[in-house]
Amino acid sequence: MKKLRWVLLIVIIAGCLLLWTQMLNVMCDQDGLC
Image (tube, rainbow, N blue to C red; front, top):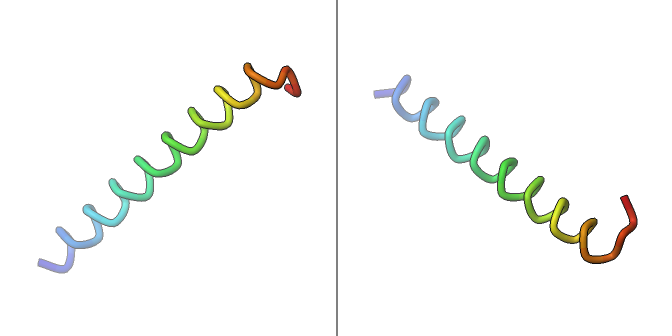
């Protein structure tokens, strides 16, 4: 059970990171900062 919980945590963190980078890319495209 503990391993499953760790895998879930890693998947959630990875998903949040992906969403965050996508949002940053969209903001950069709109503002032309990057």
